[in-house]
Image (cartoon, rainbow, N blue to C red; front, side):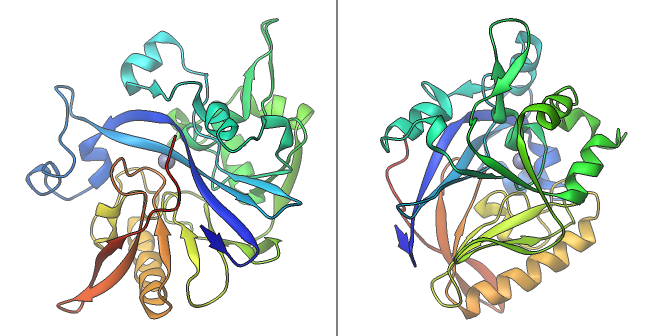
Amino acid sequence: MQVGRWQVSTLLDGTFGLDGGSMFGIVPRALWSGRHPPDDRNRITMALRCLLLTDGQRRILVDAGIGDRLDDHQRDIYRYERADGGLCASLAAFDLEPGDMTDVVLTHLHFDHAGGLLKADGQGGLEPVFPAACVHVQEEAWSWARGHSVWDQGSFFPADFDVWEEKLDLHLLQGDAEIGEGVRVQVTEGHTPGHQLVLIGQGRGSLCFCADLIPTATHVRLPYIMAFDHLPLRTLEEKRVLLAQAVEEGWILVFGHDPFTVACKLCVHDDRVVTGESVVLNTEA
Ligand SMILES: [Zn+2]
């Protein structure tokens, strides 16, 4: 799909399983289990979806999935299933190699979004998957991840951050920013400090990569908020504002974790914002 100067596509790193109760917070299982049937350990399937933006000069990746990073124990807990060849194979479908990426925008540093930045170097260490890319992340997200948070420490790969500092071209952002012409990041902090979503285009027909503010189409409903969120009421307000603007301007929302709906428009039904027609950006590898 073309949005302004950018060719926009989605890429899949794989899928994983998270506890359904954690994904929907206070919403009872009876309400979400129809669309998201849990397995015998109460895990629901989540996509690990990234965004690719190209304009002939820059090649920007938004989020990097988990990558080939989990040990057997973690694979068992998270039921991680890597798409054949993962994110890099998805890139190859667009005739791109990891070394071609000029930028990586990370919505936040939880491992399901940032793990795929590094890979084993074959000598017991780690090396960058996208060696030429400038990595854009909010300074606040970076400090939070490095600050040994007790609350969400299980959501990080803490050992990665020293490697990042040494081997990545980190670009720390302070608030909303423009990454390229018509590509903006907007901070929403209900999920975690320094979390940012990505907006492509301006006004009507914009496309929004909602990251973990609205991880699946099911989360368009206001009370459907992850138990992981630091500030659930802030998430609710951030969703309310974003959804109102998205309806007003006919945005397309892209969902990073929805296994069924990649992207959709919105409509209003009985005074509530609900999901509308699905939008196909590309065939997803
Ligand atoms: Zn996530």
